[in-house]
Image 1 (cartoon, rainbow, N blue to C red):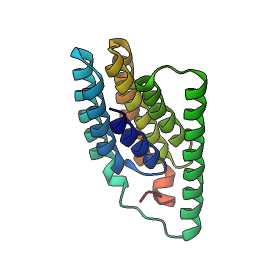
Image 2: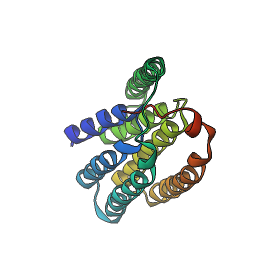
Image 3: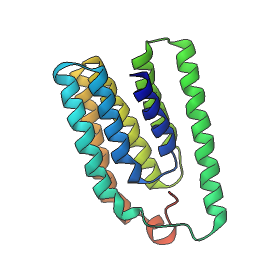
Image 4: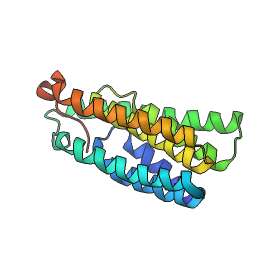
Length: 184
């Protein structure tokens, strides 16, 4: 279980500064973690939600993925900001581990949420959307692992609302026409 959570945490950190192409792998890895950690109906519901929602998001966000940067200075700037977000996420996880000691599964689920929130600190709207979706994946994982129906329901509603808002708003933003997406 710890190895699976470690892989999910590394994938969450890898998702910072990337576009939506990482969402299917993130969702499947989180689904495997909830299958190992959780039991009963909440775990099964979280497993199905993680797989279906992330595949749905990937289908919607993949149309933004082929854009590549034209200048090297923009790539360096985005990668530097992504590296700072990764360091910030690791510091927050360390502080959470030192202060709370909630237990390993809950700590690792909260680490996935924190990594997603640090990914949402990027300046490009597509990367912010992907970071928030990864954070909500962590909340669904936490709800499935602890058997909390309310957390699963609230996270699924937020996830769906953010995805609908992202699919409606992202094509209308001016950055799509003026600035390429920096995710490789």
